[in-house]
Length: 127
Image (cartoon, rainbow, N blue to C red; front, side):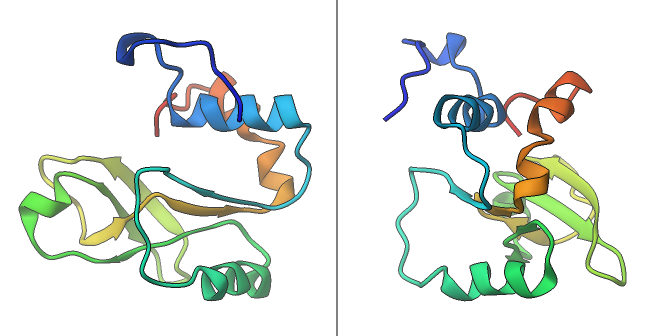
């Protein structure tokens, strides 16, 4: 377990910074499967990991969500004809699409090394 040193919601680091803290603290260099700890699963993640390995790229899990209220409580992405993400919105008031992203991500090791670069470039700390 890694303690980020925060004791309130107002001082927490955020999901992205927490991932970077784990990468640095544990000196992680392999591919990573990252998921939020407040989820209960009733399915296997093995096909998701296999998909990432087959595609040889980092991946996010997504599913169609057509209910606006549910879309407004999660991340919504849009993708192009190659299934590359073209937009990523957290809890949008007016979603651009209907692909909802539960907090399940497979990061290739090459991309894990770029998390700090993303943070330095203005990536949101929590999404």
